Length: 393
Image (cartoon, rainbow, N blue to C red; front, side, top):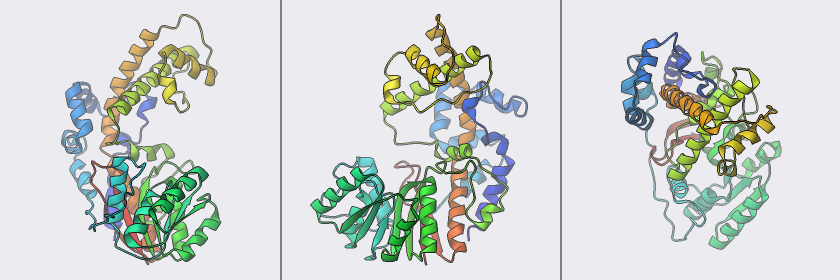
């Protein structure tokens, strides 16, 4: 069913690979200076207002990129998926305790996109089991919530007991093959925003254990245990596009849920990382990007010089006196200018790449004999990760 759409996406993604299969953070200047001079000139002429407009409005970006990607609108249309039909999922109980409002709305929309069922449900990577608790109350079904963090299981069980939800928590590693046995007692499996190989593992269990119904919203495609992506379907294994773990991150770069504070923190982190990268290239005498570890909020609350000193110590880069913070921050600002423009080009291909990945999953399930529906369960403004795969044996 998905073969034609997948093949068209695969052809276009392969054709424009040089525009999106890049790592903007690793480069100091626009990477297409030799191959796409007109594009680089146009990127350089973008003022802040235009750049922000294209970053925030996908349709405007499609129009602007059309001179260099004539099939930009076709790419956009290939990503159009139907909105899944909804049902009412309201309950008399207050079930959204300790759940952020936006997250609770995602849970409600995900539950509403599933047909009512009294089948026992296996909630995969459940966290505190908010989704399972809602379905237990709405459908009057039993829910087995699988979560590996014991503290979350304990908290989730307390919430379930308090509301009278027939919900049982199982503290276990989703990669333990034994957890698939729960599908023998659960007629359906549900997973909202299960990451990378975790949701792939659920799909394999569901197929191998003869699951009857599956509702899945994939997320974090890059969290895989192999350096490169291994397509699930025969269709995907024959594709032209080959993806590294870093390529998979492109599908996740859009966010609509960050607060103003989170955006400011992200901006500071980018600036400081790029500034440090400029310094370390000079200090080591090696003009190459040097990956740095994850940064905590506390790392960004102090002085930029202390941040650089800590990163240098971690990466064993010799530190010398005479460090000039303002000079290196200015170099970081210049890098950020180029980074945002390179990322703008790659953003045209975010949703097409995600759709390619989702269709690979959908076709895999079809190859195993399932009837599959793919659509969106909520508005994009609620979460960009709004694609849902429904499968039934």
